[in-house]
Length: 378
Image (tube, rainbow, N blue to C red; front, side):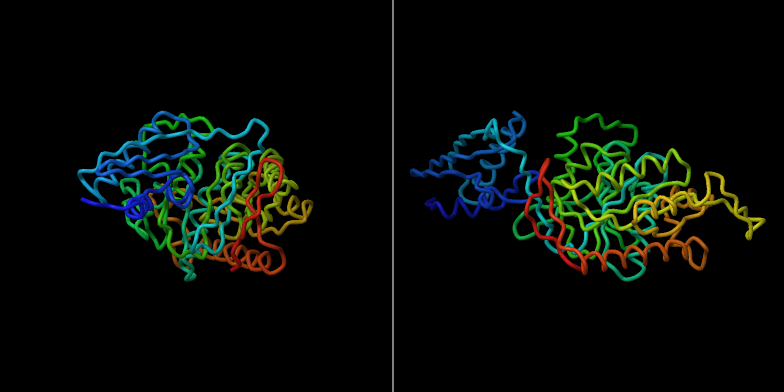
């Protein structure tokens, strides 16, 4: 069979570069193609030095050419690993995801304050309001979204978008979800170094068929660390929400979380603070409020940091029960919890609108400086 260089390039356009959201031709990885009779030589440059990455790249190229161009083609792949210059700065460019209007990071200074619970309930409340919503479970080491959305046994399927193979997020309650929990066993610990975790996140971000979304919520790990930096290097975050409980220990860590986003080198707008477990009201004494962890700590912190207090969530047993059975509490109709989450969600939406009206688009970051990238106004 006779084939041309254009035939080969067209075939290679169907191979996505893992974690980069681009195919081999778009990314410039394909440096040269030589054909002679039924022989094909492909010169390609990749940035991942791992042996597994080189073998996978070679196998993908051979299979694609033989499947899409000619089964008789004798394919030779020459792979070069592109090492960054010794004095080069880390300039990971952020890539806005086509079709996603706003990317909101949900963070907490410490673990155990209910950040994932808040994320799940924000997501379903946004969906109830008519928004198109997605959740990326970026808590690589403690993924909980599969449980909270009752999709533990589900697995993302493969779908083809513009000739490229993409992951199709799992969907429930009108929310699209991707989590590392879909790819590991329930009793399997994720023991990864930062770069490996960042690569997995990039694949869930850029190799997924998110479609049209008004909001993509990022459920970040607790603290301020490598995963947070990787996310903000990869994406222009519209704004961040910080979740805290009222006690001083949690507020001290929440303050650090706000400070991280407000650093000059990061400069992600903080949409506000949510106070979880604000007070306890016994079922038999619905008018009573017991401030077990302290009173209005997040309110005072918000005033001190000059960021909005988005709302308070009471300490109610049914929130925990709802999360455990995979049906977020905000789905319960005509309850105080539904009202609380509706108020908070409306405040988040309003702050996003204000942020997009009053501030310039957020840019994805470098290690110490900003990387130019467009964000999308609501």
